[in-house]
Amino acid sequence: MTLSPYPHHNPSAAHSPDTAGAGTLDPVRWPDIARLPRSSRARTAIAERIVRHALGSLPLYVHINGDVSGPIGLGGPRMTLHDPAAFHRRIGTRGLIGFGESFMAGEWDAPDLVAVLTVLAAHADQLVPASLQHLRKAFTPRHPPAQRNTPEGSRENIQHHYDLSNELFALFLDETMTYSSAVFRALPAERALLADAQRRKIDLLLDAAEVGPGTRVLEIGTGWGELAVRAAERGARVHSVTLSAEQRDLARERVRAAGHADAVTIELCDYRSVGGIFDAVVSVEMIEAVGVEFWPAYFKSLERLVVPGGRVALQAITMAHDRMLATKDTYTWVHKYIFPGGVIPSVEAIETISRDLTDLRPVRMDGYGAHYAETLRLWRERFAERTPEVDALGFDRTFRRMWTFYLAYSEAGFRSGYLDVRQIVLARTGGAARVGEGQW
Image (cartoon, rainbow, N blue to C red; front, top):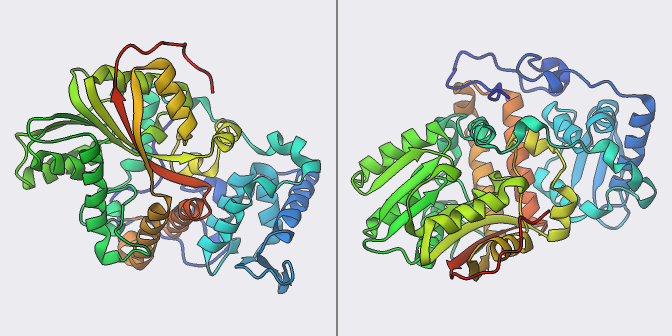
C-alpha cells in the first residue's frame, strides 16, 4: 500500500477546471474517476433498477435530463443526474463506492448535498428492495488485505489521511486545530464559538479522567496537540503518541509555543508499543482507526497502561450494533478515499469487549451526535470558502469535490441518527472474569 496520490504542498500541480464530466479529470491522479469502469449490461441494468426503486420511494426529487421524478406530496431535497448512464454504470460496478466516485466525477450534484445524503442515510435499510437483497454481496466488496491495521498497516492508513497537509487542515479547522466533535453550549452552533466548544469537549474528557496536578496522562492519538496542552495547563505530565509525522511535528511546535515542552512528550508510536503505566488514558476518536480485528488488543492495551483505580476517557463515533454487524466487513467509499482501515464500533461492542477481556468497566457515557453534525457543518462551510487557498496548496477540483462529499456524508450520518458520538469513561477495577478473545 502506498500513500495517497494527492499532492502535498505543491502549488505548481495542475488543476482541473470546475466543470462536470470525467473528461476534465487527471487520469494519473484519479484513475478510477477519470475512466468509467467496465460493467456488464446486466449489472448496470440491476443497478439502475435498484437506484430507481430507492430514489422513487424516498422524499427526494431527482432531475434527469430535464425530467423530474419524486413522490408526490412528500417534498424533499433535489439531486440532479448530469450523466445517468455513467452514474448507473459506476454503481453497477462498484456499488456505493461508485455512488461517491460519480459525485467526484461531476456526474451528479445537489443544491443541498447534506440534505440528500441525510435522506439516504435515514433510509439506509430500505435502499435495496427485498427481492434483490440476495445480490447485495455482489455490489459490496470486502476490505483489501493491505488495509489491515497491523502496526505497519496502521501507520500507512493514518499517513494516508493525517499526513495530507497540516496547512490543508488549518484552512477549515479552528485555532485549536482540533479535528473531532466539539461540544457546544447551545445548538445550532455559531462559528465564532467553535474554538470554545472544542476546549469544552477536551475539558469534559479531562474532568472525566480526573486529570489534575501531578496526573500522569497517556494520550493515544495526538492530533495537533490541543488536549496535551490543556492537560499540561492543569499541572499534569503528558505522554502523547501518534502515527502521523505531520501531526507530531506541528503538535510539538504548539506545545513549545504554549510553554509546556517540559511537561509534554510526543512520540511517533503505535498504541501497542507504548510502555509504562499512567493514572489516566485519554483517546479521542482514535478507536475508529483500530479495526475490528484489533479491538481486543486495543482494550487490553488500555487496561495494561492505566493503574488500578485509574480512568480511561474515550471519545468514539458509534453506530447501532445491528448496522455495525452488517457493515463491518464492507469496503466503502470512505475506506477507499478517506480513512483506509477504519471501522466504527457500537456501544455494545465496546461494553462487551471491555467486560469480557479486561478489568475496565464503563462508569459514564454521554452522547453528542447533534454537536458533531454542527461541527461538521462549520468545517464544511469554511472549507468551501477557502477554495483559492486549497487550490494554492496543489489540491485539484476532484480533491475538493471528494472532501466536500466526505464532510457532507459525515454530517448526514449524524443528522440522520445513523451515527452518534459518545464520551465513554471506563474505570479499571480488577478481578474481572475473562471469557476469551470474542468474535464480531
